[in-house]
Image (tube, rainbow, N blue to C red; front, side, top):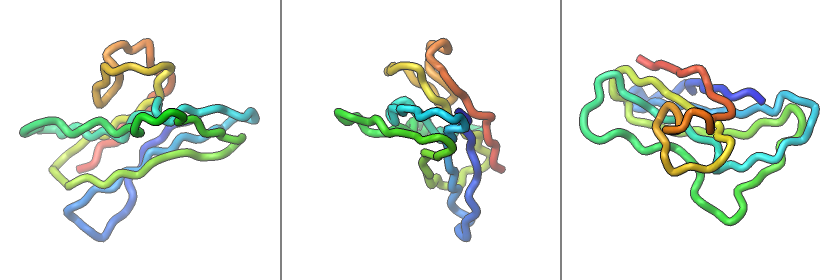
Length: 120
């Protein structure tokens, strides 16, 4: 599978819109636990105040979706423009509560990670 981040054009210069896309680029059906997909997570180049929250799905009893071959799953988030920001996203192998914007505390839990997206 392939995980990407992309900036979405917007007419509002005070907002930044980032889309996270997971592509099943195989010929097999994949069961995806949406709660394992983390991001897009912004990190300011010059942080002030509290960090922004980690983007993830709310806990539900069943967060599983079927991704057929060459199908997409993703999410789009809007953030206030705050100078230079780098966005991160990743897919976990299993659940953990120890998350950072660029990955979990235990790096072995990461299945796929995106190339960071920097927006100025």
